[in-house]
Length: 307
Image (cartoon, rainbow, N blue to C red):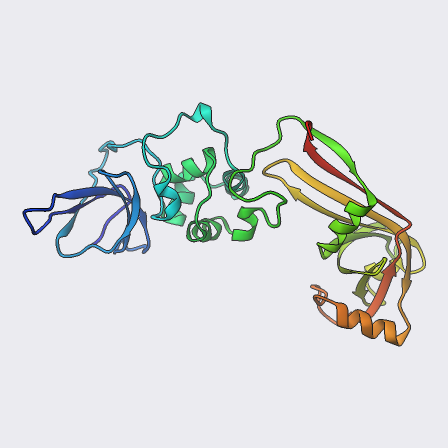
């Protein structure tokens, strides 16, 4: 048995007491069109995963034949069942945060909806639903989309967004507000990658990423004597940490400014090494610990105007 998106799965009951059932195939799990299929049943409008038995056959969609329904279709998971009934008017809904991120990633790849849906093995109408209305698709759906778009599920879900995934909206009336020192410290301690500003060996300014830790009142990172971050030693330097959600036009940033110095005391070095949550992503021998003790700690956050 082989099918294409839009074909109809028909089940002819072998008993006289059961009625015939049919539905549209809205999701494929194998590129060759073999079962199982995600089927949207015509009697309930719910989508389920179906392994057709001997009483089932495929009614192929003829070329140019119009579809019989105009509702979103997609993989057979729990979230589609909540979309049963007539599709709401596009004027009454705005995209959810996941839909916005899918759209951003798709446009970055210069992909049409049709091509993206083909790569993700889902119906183009279901992809349109995800992009245009609030939705919280399953992990299985996101895995297929992430693979089609050359990104990750974490990116599509917000990558550490401050709001729960699925129902976020872009701010209509944003404002930029200052963040107090305590909130800045909290944000610093919950993240581990920042950008440090230094003067490079050629005298030009440089901003480079580092993996950092917050230990007591200091921000520490590992580097090597001959690489750019080491230029911070003996100067007043700045480290910036942020989280930006391009799809929702929201975010925050924290700036820590203070003198940087090398940690040389053996017990302190051992303590830092034991405390570290990760090794430097850049790899190599990076065993020189640099400590920044902030004298100025400031931050800003974009929030709704009524907060």
